[in-house]
Length: 502
Ligand code: NAD
Image (tube, rainbow, N blue to C red):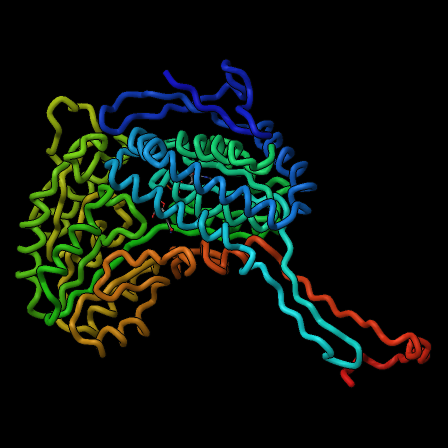
């Protein structure tokens, strides 16, 4: 069995027998076999990682921007060369199909490339001669040790949303990946060391809430970036901010796709199937609810069902598979329980994926695609984030009724509208209460130079991930007012009035 331990000070931490002595299992979702044991950190390992990051900060913060960017360019090349290996690690522990895992790596690389161009984003502002012989400069400086905590569903991309920007800004980093899929983060750290990231600048501790709480409470941690479910995001935000840390905590989602009667229904059905069942629905940007307006419902549901039935499900490393298994057996069973309850709570079960299995992989965490029609907004399937291949269809008489449903959700991550009516699309963009909006685009994941994040219960804190907001989150501003008078003006005498411009 493979062993994954922490990465502290530029090398694996502890001996093969372990450090805290506590281990967790990592399962291959396609076979159900435990393939790896992962070390689970306690307070001592957390302290060692934060200590290494604190020590490295003293020199990394004063390294030149040119040196940091040269390292990031080398890192980008190494990641690009090893993208297949990274994708294979993602598939082996998270379960998603290889092509999808390659897409995840590509979207993570986008942020490393953004970090390579950080010189422009970090540039300050200067105003000269704001008053007699007085200049004002605004600069941004790093914060110190940053902690990143990430979920299982994007084992590489979400780490890459965080640490490349954080370290490019001059901070050092301690990453706590999901212990369900820890290996991709280790390869990311090894390649960072190979690219020249100095020891201690990027550290990894694996673990569960014990490790997370030790990180949130650590006095030497300046800021926390979190991505995961809403209850944990809320906990991380309140606990770390109560300790005076800067926190951004992105949570769960229930993303709605509104389809108006004038939409191209074939294109809308393609989009719904892509966005609902890709990665087995385990994406925070997955479409989990289609709101069919007016007369579209029947025609749309039959088109979605026709396409969904053709999705090829199998192990992620089989090139024929379009959708893989769910991450754990417990999660698979929970997802299945929503389909069972939906029928009792009045929905029409158009497609039921509960009995699906793959020949030769009977112990895998399989779930076929499920499609629920006429779902009530009071039902569990509508209200909760299911995070599996279950698409709910809700019917609405009018655009206004559809908007009341969408904006009534406590989540506010993303939404989309499918229509040919530009006026309706424009109105939707302005009225919908989500942080990311798609127009005829089902999963509007912003490109790297725009920022990513939701509203309401989908995000806590002020700054979003990547883009210019990451630069603001990972740095703090300083404004310098300086006066260099002519020597003859120096002895003008004291002036006890409040400084005004003149
Ligand atoms: P999770 O909240 O269970 O775990 C996220 C991280 O928190 C992991 O590192 C985990 O080890 C840690 N953690 C779990 N329970 C904890 C606890 N009680 N106390 C402290 N730490 C704890 O999320 P997950 O199941 O790994 O990932 C799926 C969730 O992440 C979904 O809700 C999904 O919508 C969300 N997600 C959100 C975004 C976004 O950008 N908003 C992106 C990806 C995933």
